[in-house]
Structures are given as structure tokens and as C-alpha cells.
Image (cartoon, rainbow, N blue to C red; front, side, top):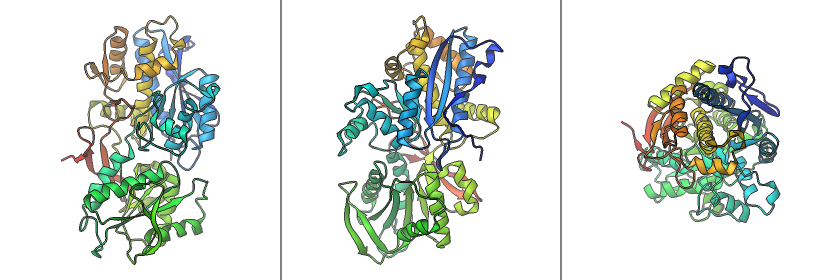
Length: 479
């Protein structure tokens, strides 16, 4: 695995100033910050390369346009820890001058979002947040609820600080529903007359709603579905603790139902300890890459033969590198690695030329997150004598203006960014068509992406079917 260890703050890309040779960078620098995991079991180690590529290309376009504006990309390690994320993001904004923050997962994102909604006005960072892998359906949802009023306010985000360049878990579940219920008799593969699905998730604000969504979506196809929920605490679990992971695997594949998911309350069970004498027809999870690796190994030790379906995180590089042939036959749904159009192809070509690596999971979403924030920041800075003084609130407001349906379409890559700079400078509207998809933010800051059903084959992940979730929320299979 291509791994980088970043301790405190790392300045991404001295090469961002490449067009200037040995000259110092221009003074009119807009700082973009990223707090993403670089050291835990779920580290997204390729994202810095994707974000750096975007800044390199944007600075090249600005150089060609004789603009005195440049971007600087500062990265800090979140260690997949909300407290660390808050501390690092605050430092990037307060001490490094970042005008926006890119973050990595739902828990870290919610922790940052809560700063704007708690009673302490002194901790507000007042910059837009852009999450690359926030799949929680509660985030950016005006109808979301929580027992904690601050968390609920952060979910609903009335002040519109939060955005994301990844699709929600509900879209992924739409595809998984059609795949899982399309097997056997409306999902009943064993033929015992019961469609049972066992799901394992983290005991958090993402895990519980995920299982409830599974139940409600599957029940619309097969009303007699039984969804069992197994939760793992959010405390750190030793990936080498085989006894623990073997016990979780045993709970997944046995014929008992420890917690039958309540259809109305995400954290509730209909019953516990039920001896149903029915083994599952499918297994599902929504864990991080470290945990689902350990669980897959435990299932292999248990000689499991039940198909294991995954969320997008299972497609992370470290999963296939660690498990090898053990991923064979396992399936999951993820965003496409890059869009099948000129923008996606350009990104793929440029990333490989810059790093020697093919795009991996959500690299294109990280690239688009960086581009979207940069284009918004540039747009907000037009007319300022010093672009570096642009305010986070101005960047926030401009984010909704870079995907104007009536604007000129701008794709990925340096040449397209030259066009975007010229159009924005002239006061013309643009419509950024990204590497991961259209990047058309809705009124809540969400986007839609096309999805892929992937399968482990020969120790590698292979796309076996793609689904169009951009044209329709039904996510119809692409022929």
C-alpha cells in the first residue's frame, strides 16, 4: 500500500508553485485545509495525492492567466478521531488561515459541524466544511432528529456550513436492495420461507440509521424480511483480537436474532434473544476498512458460505492488499471510481501521470471537493485587492454558484480550469462537471453519484454492474 505518515500539519505541494520556478509563491494565497485520516486502520492514504493534483492544476491555470492568486493545500491527520479533527481544523483556520476544511467521515464531520451550533460562540470556525465520505443520511437532512439538540442542529445545518462530495448511504442501499432481493425468492436464498439479513455496524449516529434504512427498503420488496442488527462499540478494538472478531462472526451467521431492528426507531429492537432457527440469507456491514478486514478473516476461519455484502469502505486499497483471495465472492456497492466521461477520464489520466497509481476509492471525490472549494474561493475573491482576505462566509455563499445549470460546463484538468478562471473573472456563470460526477449540490449541500456493484475476483475488486443514480433516485442498472 502506498502509505504516507503525516504528523501535524503537512504543506501539500511545494510543486503547486511549479510554474514559478525558483521564485517565492505570490503573496495572495488562499489556504484550503484538509483534516483526513492518515494513520488509523481506515486511513485514506491516497487522498492527499488527489487533492494535491487539483491544487497543482488550479495554480497552473492561475499562472497562465497571470493571476496573482494561488492556492495552498494544508493537510492534517484526523486519526479518525473527532476530538483530533476539531483541534486540527481549528488550528488550520485560526493559525494557518484556512478558508475551508475538507473532512473524512460522518463522525468527524458532525463533530466539526456542532461547533457552529453549540452555545459557545468562541469556538466557531466560520468556514465551509466539505466531507468526502459522509454517507450518513442524517447529515444535511432538515428533517433529521437526535436526542442531543446540538447534534440535531448540526444534522439539519440551517446555517448551511456543511457540504459533501459523496453520495448518501440511502442511495447505496437502493442498489443493494435490488441486488440482494433479486436473489432466490425475493431474497430468500435458502428456501426456508424466511428472508433474513444480518447486519453489523458501529453503535453510532451512522450505524443505527443504516440498519433501519435496510429494513425499510427491504420490507418494501419483501414485507416478511427479518433484519438482525449487531452493533460494535465505537471504542477502539484490537484488529488482532481473534477471539473478539470470531465472536462477532458467530453472531452474524448463527440462527438466533439478538436484536431485530425496529422499523420506527433506529436505536430500538423489536425483540432480543429470539431463537428463530433460521440462518441469514445475506450478511451486511457498514464498518471501517480495519474492522471489516478483521471480520472477513473471522468469517473465513468460520468457513462461512453466506454472501457478505458491503458498503463502499470495503473497497479501500488496504482491504484487498491485506485479504487477497479472501475477498473473492464478497460484494458491495460504492461510488464509481471516476465518471465515465471526458472529465473522469482526464482525472484518471492525470492522477496516474502524477502518482503512478490508478484512481482508488473516492480519490475522485477528494479531487472534486478540493476543486469545488477552490473555484468557490476564487469566485468569492474576485474584486478583492488581496484575495487571501476572502472570508469563509464568502466562500460558503459562492459554493452554490459553481454548478449553475445555465453556466458554461467546465470539466477536470488544467486546460478546463483555465477556462473556469477566465469565465469567473469575467463574471460569467460556470457549471463544474467533476471527475466523480456532476457535483450538482442541492439546497442542502448534497450531491448524487453513479454507483457500482463490485465483487472480489482473483484477489481484486472488479465492477460487475453500474447504476445510474444521477438521472433518477431509482438507480437503474446501466445496460
